Amino acid sequence: MLIEGYDGGSLVAGEPLVDRPGFWSNHLWGPCWRGASAEPEWFGADGADVDAMSDLLMDPKRWPVFLMPVEGGYEAVVVYRNLVDDYGVDYVFTHPSWSGARQIAGWDGDLHGDTLTWRELIRIVASPSPTADGIKDPAARLLLLLPLLAEHAPSDEAVATLTAALIAAGASEDTAPTTAQHLLEHAAGNAWHDPTWGSPLSGSSGPPSPAVSGVLARLGIT
Image (cartoon, rainbow, N blue to C red; front, side, top):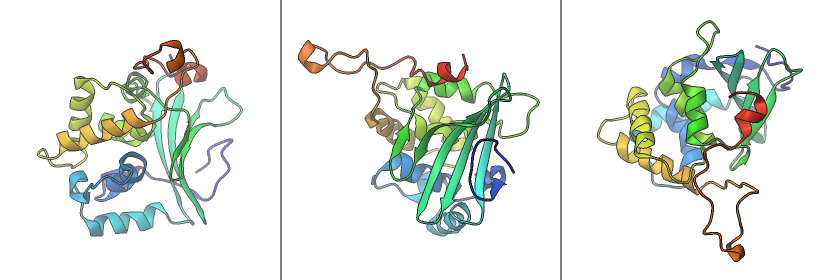
């Protein structure tokens, strides 16, 4: 597998992994949980599942890649960057008209780079290209990109949508609403800065819930 403009190790298709036990615990636990007392069972797995999946996801000889085609020829791509002593997850977008892939964010213990609002996240989730290869299931797309979410006032609709996605991915109906709420509360705690915000000294009460972070507009996705 080749992602033009993205230099890495041996890239391999990761799509089959999303349906295997332990995947979502691995993918969401670090970026979205930050030390909360989550249990693998909350994501429909157990400890053995999580350990086995960790070995697959973090193999330095194989870098799993998750492609999500978006209408207009774009692709949202999640890459497990398995460099020795520099493990992380990269979030990349591609388009045929670009000279190479554009990385918007990365996670290596902390998220750095651009974030998405709920509205932007759903824009990507709900607009798969009908003809391109890759992950088109909305639940999987939502959960794969969830670590990029930074929203200060998620709506009841967001909680319900994320709950349904977790259940579709194998989480228990009993625990999924609580898990969704915790994940969204973490997103509310992520740093998100807009230069138009006033400072507290100017009388501003703090950041509003942003409608647009701007990253999709900069990429040409409207």
